[in-house]
Image (cartoon, rainbow, N blue to C red):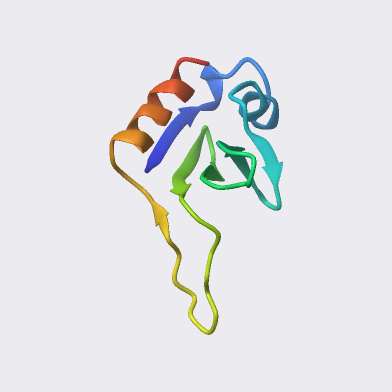
Length: 92
């Protein structure tokens, strides 16, 4: 699910905002782990789009089992993802 955040609405830089929301840097993205095993977790990629950030949020339910495939098992919509968007927006 995509979230648009205007830079003018943030009173801190995007990294600090994500930390405030409970996310930690994860490679070139951010993650919020929901269980001790590392999964499920919310995963966000951020694109800088001029005056706003585009956050691409999904829920990883389980560890990737790619093998020879490149498929991803992330959920990009649904009640749980919508609730997380609402939670993030409360930090603005």
